Length: 113
Ligand code: AMP
Image (tube, rainbow, N blue to C red; front, side, top):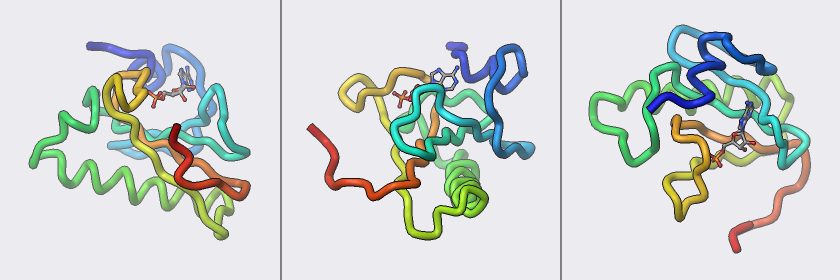
């Protein structure tokens, strides 16, 4: 199922892109929940984390490496948080796998209702 994130990958709708390579894209969340809120997505449209299979291992790892690179670019040396929401009970709203990178302030924990 196609989502708005595939349209961002194809540049059919605008986004504030902060990183791109052949497999991944990172752009600022349109409704930021922290001073830095970036979404890291695979260009391949995998719907949700629970759809990951062994053939996605390198890609899934790549998303974490990209998150670290974006965090360096955003100067988050004091720390940050990575979140993947999965499915209805995980509050996922866009069904294209994405990693939230949140930082730029002291975050609370656990931060779940
Ligand atoms: P999730 O709830 O984990 O599926 O997160 C989806 C995120 O995508 C939310 O934080 C939204 O604010 C964000 N979002 C939705 N549409 C866009 C868009 N066009 N550009 C940037 N971020 C978006």
